[in-house]
Image (tube, rainbow, N blue to C red):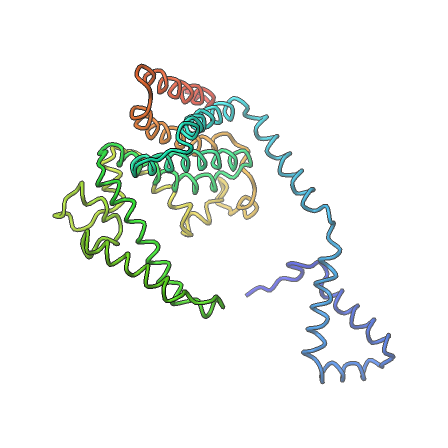
Length: 352
């Protein structure tokens, strides 16, 4: 195995040797006496040097470091956005339109009560609005793989939202909400198992009892398997289907055509060999520097941006159909569709 010098601190060996030599001269010891002292108190002395040296180096770092970093990041974003202004303009116009929908609902519902359907759908809309904005922001920074990772989560939210709206069942919404207990139950079990090694205080007996009581109530109401994956959706698929997975929901929601992209994005999310080493040049050489380098090629931005808006449109189509005032739905979705069409016009044209 190859060992490398100066991985964190430049010239660390020289600095350590210089520190030791200065200490030897300060106490007036010969080299032989000093070596003997080090051999007798080796651990304590080197721990003291390491501690002092690391503090010294940290204190020497410019206090304006974060401002320098911020300027560099802002400059990088401005460079990318100026290079592809129309592309980012239409992306964020769409996101702004979606946020306007959320804002209007927020205005109208503040201080009112809502049933479980509205709570789930309004919160779902807010979450996909936020994630779409986050995807756009990381794209302006040239972080295309981070954008794909976010898109995969965004896609799952949107698919579940479309599935719920297509069936529009009060019981389905309630089952979906109740199924959130699955994560609470898993968090409780994991915390009990690991709190000591994490040096966290234990859960109180009453907190554990409340969680277990709620889980037992749901199992009695829906069945012992209710806290399994996607069991809440069995209302639609029927009890004859032993196991419901995300693909079933995706297919039922009419969005299975996007599965190749979902699987592709999964390769970015999961630490597979192929995704980690996807940085070869035309000659087959691995370009290590490309792993941390931002993308400046428009082709790299197209898929994350287009996939986000197309999936978002599918979600908003159902949402606007449900909540738009009479006579406004067609105009609302037409505007969103035209934004996507204009975004596509900014893509590089294929040359025969």
